[in-house]
Length: 233
Ligand SMILES: Cc1cc2nc3c(=O)[nH]c(=O)nc-3n(C[C@H](O)[C@H](O)[C@H](O)COP(=O)(O)OP(=O)(O)OC[C@H]3O[C@@H](n4cnc5c(N)ncnc54)[C@H](O)[C@@H]3O)c2cc1C
Image 1 (cartoon, rainbow, N blue to C red):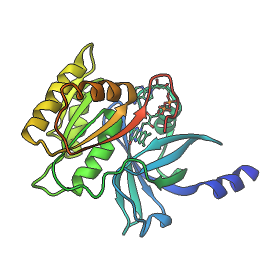
Image 2 (image 1 turned 135 degrees about the horizontal axis):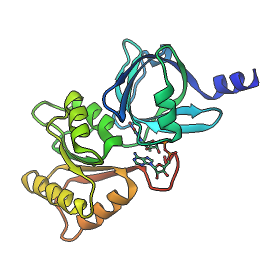
Image 3 (image 1 turned 60 degrees about the vertical axis):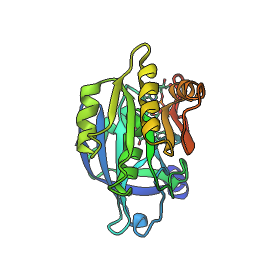
């Protein structure tokens, strides 16, 4: 009873209405809750989910939020036998979950103009959600470092990001990503540059793009995870 009281005080509740296994490592969750109706949120906001009671929280990005119907989609990359991986693999439709947020994280709005997003599997949701509200004449350019290119491409196509550049992780792959980023910024010098995903890759890329300086409008940065750190936020 004390646990329930604490949960009700700290968290908002949502119901899992559907779960789609998009691929061996990607699960799409459909959530429904009354408090989502009329909710105002901004692309890039984060949602913290209780994956193990009482206090093990993991952070995700709304893949889609429909404030009229009171529904939200999440995309979870289950990379291993970790709290989030075990949680999402055990979830069943009808389950209730406890969440905190959504709250501000990566400032993406308002941003007109061209934009290029770097990230990895944990960034597919933010990219798909942001692309949806951008003008069709200015599609979001994306480049993702991934573990399995075939799996990622299939998932990205389903999310409307079939045009994204996908580079498999291997020694030196960030050199190829830097070259791609430079070529896009060369074509579209006033682009906004957004760097997400693994902290160490963001650091390497930022350093590489300084010498010589790659032309871009501004830079937004948010690390979504770091090797050896749990539940980075
Ligand atoms: C603002 C924000 C938004 C995010 N949005 C999403 C999202 O929409 N979808 C999504 O899937 N993730 C998202 N993430 C990333 C996710 O929260 C982390 O990957 C989280 O660590 C996963 O929890 P876990 O229990 O699997 O692993 P943890 O217990 O947190 O970590 C255990 C170990 O696993 C390793 N690890 C963590 N993440 C990864 C990874 N992705 N790939 C390989 N190794 C990893 C690290 O070495 C870590 O020490 C987001 C993170 C932030 C901060």
